[in-house]
Length: 279
Ligand code: AMP
Ligand code: MN
Ligand code: MN
Ligand code: MN
Image 1 (cartoon, helix red, strand yellow):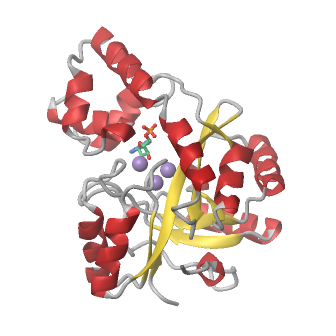
Image 2 (cartoon, protein in one colour):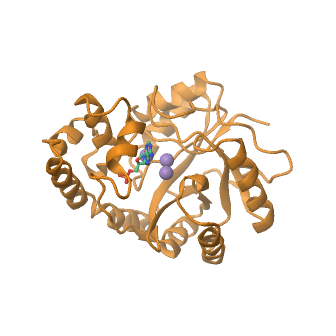
């Protein structure tokens, strides 16, 4: 199997590397097919494509769209989308709109537990102010000595029920899937083991996703252990989903898995990369 990595982030969203640095790191790690999938933003794709031409990596244009389903936040990756598609661009612009107000509410909530100046602090870590993320807050909170690493920040401050978490409404599932399909892309459910869904909720979600036009699922993700991989391989077989392999890399030293280092797909699954068009 080729070394394929179909989900990662540059500093156009909450990654720390420039798109060209990300592509060069992927190439050095032996990646042959790479998708850049920044959150709700397409700004890094041109720069990544240029770097990919230079080093000879096959670059897939991607995006990771934030969706609200019932009271859960779910991420849908779009692969081989046309970045010039105006409906996709307008949809993403709409999804991004609420981020500034959310960031202010997060900073207020953090100030209430004694963590001051978090908005300015998060902005220091953010290369693209249109895409201020919880990950930028997390880096500032580590800097301030409130937690050992960003993972601990999420556990203690930035997840539901914790003092710096504020709820937010993102895109509708059917809209996000529709924008991806309309832009010629393949929708892929990101890191399904990350969501706090009961088995019953997961089934309902997967039915909704499939009905909306969802086609793929990340079986091998940097966020998945072996049990998760076996579980979501079964889901892929049961629903007839194409299977993806993805690091969800954000930054050197953050997260479990570097570019190109997610486990290999179980051999009987249908690899999503065999179904992606190239522009
Ligand atoms: P946002 O879109 O601003 O809500 O931020 C979501 C981002 O925060 C994700 O894409 C991850 O990069 C990061 N994140 C979310 N949950 C965790 C976690 N438990 N540990 C580490 N990073 C996380
Ligand atoms: Mn992220
Ligand atoms: Mn995600
Ligand atoms: Mn991601």
